[in-house]
Image 1 (tube, rainbow, N blue to C red):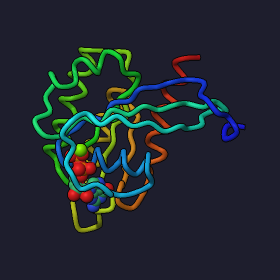
Image 2 (tube, helix red, strand yellow; image 1 turned 120 degrees about the horizontal axis):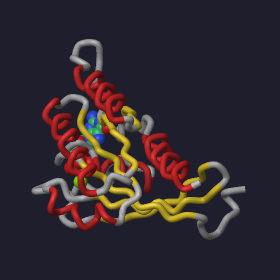
Image 3 (tube, rainbow, N blue to C red; image 1 turned 60 degrees about the horizontal axis):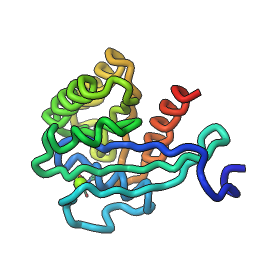
Image 4 (cartoon, rainbow, N blue to C red; image 1 turned 135 degrees about the vertical axis):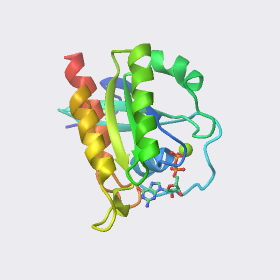
Length: 178
Ligand code: GDP
Ligand code: MG
């Protein structure tokens, strides 16, 4: 089985993209360390971490590049984009402007590298309740359907769908490999 495996069958490189404050570093921390924000420092340099996941009986070493949120512009990611297999474009479900920027990020990515598998992530789903608008959920679904992207809502805080989000993008990448 997968867990007895020492090395890995495939190496995949993922980029986390999205506005500052949407929860990129929190998602990475939850996925790689099983913790919510153990490190309160905002990311100042590209943080690269890795974890193994098992998909379809194969071991994937998932290398994740967490781009600093502050002043991130396309020029900050352009070199990374060329060598990446997948991207998680993250927005905050409570913030329409972060969703609008997610769409911009997606367009930039498409121009730079059309081969990237993209997963659209609406994070902070724990903050959505009956009293707040779910505009961002509908907008996210619509964009994902239009562009054939994976789409999932996550909560790094409540550990909801975080594992699933990463496994799904690895699965999309794997399906293209075979
Ligand atoms: P980044 O700039 O995209 O890396 O965002 P961070 O991971 O630094 O998170 C920004 C803020 O949002 C921090 O205060 C986090 O604690 C908070 N945050 C991140 N994910 C969630 C979540 O799923 N739910 C809630 N309620 N807050 C979150
Ligand atoms: Mg960060």
